[in-house]
Image 1 (cartoon, rainbow, N blue to C red):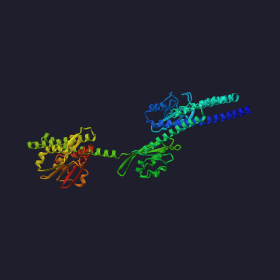
Image 2: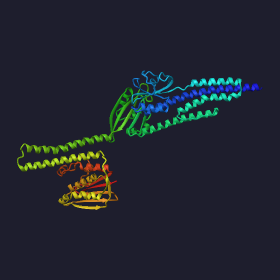
Image 3: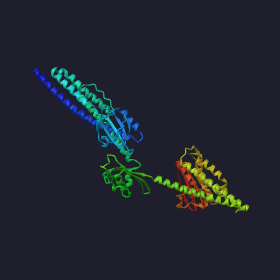
Image 4: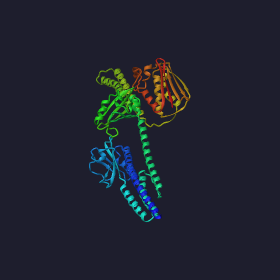
Length: 557
């Protein structure tokens, strides 16, 4: 009976161990293949996301440093190896399975590393390069051999010796499992210490490793969510169209430009989304061949640059049909700047040409003897000097305007606003008396943090205009309000018409060109005032009425 009991128990144990052996081998083989493919896809995603076209070595070293078994290869469109973390091969790689079947995992023997390797590649259409990642195939065959050897040996020993060797045999059996768990922990970049021999505990450890792998997958999903957030909040528009002609991705910026609802665009044919942009034929061309196209589109006082480009990635292609990327950039500011620059140079040329023409004309008449009377020569000379001074003032103010636009670092200090106003008034004392102008002052002084020259320039320009365009026996009022942090300069002069008020800060713009030139105006003074205010966060408002007067109000933030 005891013998039978021993035989039965031995047979049960033997069959149990055989079943466990087969199941374990199957599980480990399946897990190994699944985890190897998942791991290689993860590494390829990391390399693809990090590569910017110039950092092959640094990206490869980053991945290689995290796992020495990972091999990274960059291959150009002709199949030549550009960079490889292992020994560089001179063979053409275009016929390799992973290159011909982008996105599919290949497994074969590597002549470079002398082991079986898993390969996976993608094509970076932006940088025109194939990116390939490979890792060694886990040694499942050796695990099977170890299981078979120790298992069969243990079964033979158990059938002859006794149950006393079961514990020893089981300990031998779990040793390769522990080794595989350590391999899995290396994949997840987490160290797992295991010292037990219990099968249940081993199973728990396998579950822990699986949990770590799932965590890595969740991390990847999190990074994908971050990427989607970035795309959604880009300041430029992007639309991705599949080879089937449906819109796969569209961000909010593009939705607003196309004036459609997002659900009307995503997963729908592109032909309905770009009505009015006249680029449907260009998109069709990009789907059938390598093609890039740029155009501009204007709507609602906005100008956009539209770029159309073919995409050859697997996730967008349909057979031989390319995917298409449409990028939308807001270039309204650039267009406005171009117009401002054009107007500036046109006006500057005109403003400098007029006094220069007069100077040349007067000097030619003097040099050719047309003017012989001493009075005429003196009058022509004075007019020449006046025009030369006006040219000089225009150039000085043009240079000052250019300096202000470059936002230079200027020295700032706390200045008394009332003292600055009084200093400027003192310099205009003679003009004020000559024109019999009455100055009314009401000061509740406060300090402003500004560059002294810039503060004086603002006050001087506004007071100069108030004096120039005021009649005799008129009044100029100056108010400083500490609570509002404001400065008001108000005159009872000729005033400005409503249609001209919105343009007085434009360069070379004059309300009365004849009177402005007669008084020595350049048309740049208020443009300079505007830029100083912008650079110092000062708001400036103007109210005016013809034949009543003008009021400028500055508020210091």
